[in-house]
Image 1: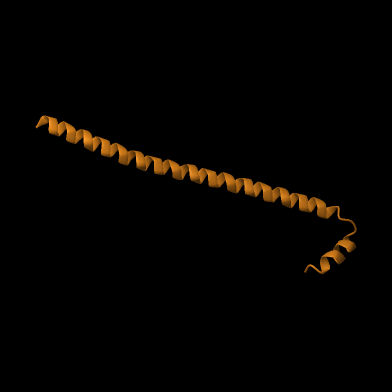
Image 2: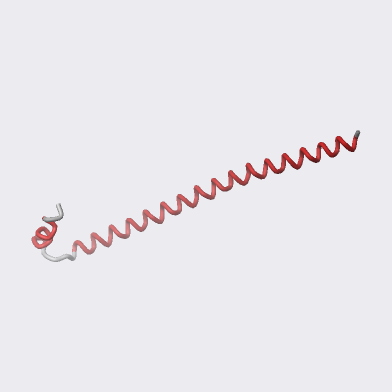
Length: 76
């Protein structure tokens, strides 16, 4: 009878460890995914800022303001 009880406790311990491992792995995966999404969003924001700075820099050196206005008039 004691042997059966030992096997039962061991089996429950194995099942508990498997369940705990799955829950822990899922939580860790969610944390990693969240960090990766935040990093991707930050990189995208940095790229947008750099493109905006380049556009402003190029726009300021585009020549005479009257010529820029004539070129942009059709785009509105």
